[in-house]
Image 1 (cartoon, rainbow, N blue to C red):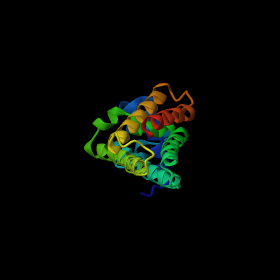
Image 2 (image 1 turned 90 degrees about the horizontal axis):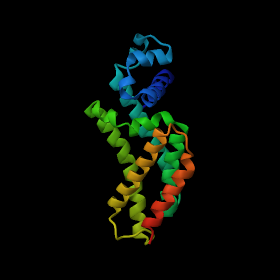
Image 3 (image 1 turned 135 degrees about the horizontal axis):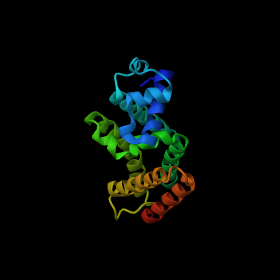
Image 4 (image 1 turned 45 degrees about the vertical axis):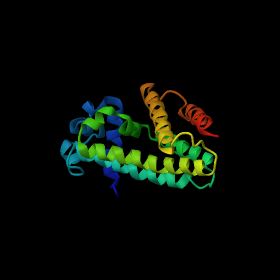
Length: 192
């Protein structure tokens, strides 16, 4: 989806408000105040809060899909596994205001349409990760003792917990280093 520069500013400001104040703090009034706009100026770009959150999630879907497809350039499953998580860590490290969009539990209670977009973000990661794991199993690099789908769930759960801890610690630890350690630990568990 294409967004105007102003819509993108609104999307980024929404992420920042969600990060600092949670879903209850994300109101059109607070958004207008953050952007130094009138509320009516926000409504010229989006119909309301839900549409803004959906736009933010759609933007994130596109960016992550683009980011993942750009890093998976090697035929080596282990390298692709590392690159996939590294790309995601780098993206969120550069855009911490989008972390909350994927890892804020209260967001899922807002609407079914928001839930669908959150699930679409998960499906993007699942698509790439499952393919990498299956390739690694086929090539005899990753264990076949655990189904590929279960390995995918374990890896995604570990990543979600890691990102949640980073958010709880107010983004104050070295996400890249600890992320690489986590990925290496998962690889140690799944490699033959």
